[in-house]
Image 1 (cartoon, one colour):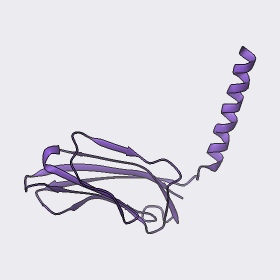
Image 2 (cartoon, rainbow, N blue to C red; image 1 turned 120 degrees about the horizontal axis):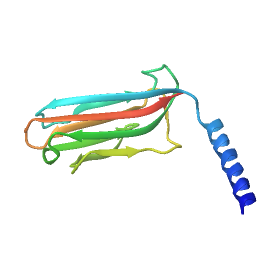
Image 3 (cartoon, rainbow, N blue to C red; image 1 turned 60 degrees about the vertical axis):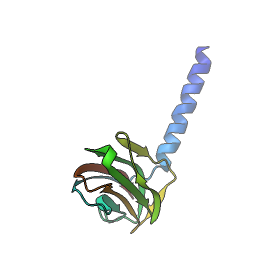
Length: 134
């Protein structure tokens, strides 16, 4: 029934508008980092401290991603707000992790992706962090 479709469409549009009103405007954060080496202790690939980009008091983490030239020899560690999400993680391929609201971070809190070589083999790692400061 076309009337039902119109009503449903209007309801979806209203919900979308409500969600957009609740979404903090803020400024985008997109940081790319790279590590190249053979260290067997963790090295920072990329990090974001809320407030460092736009001097805002709050942040929202949207996504992290990571890849390596040698997944078999690379170990990853992800830390958010001082909490280790994973460590010594060996990937089989690129990894992208989306974070869904609510996930508010306060000024000074850090998101960090680190890597290390499992045995001293040279690796090349790239990682990204995206989010917003508001």
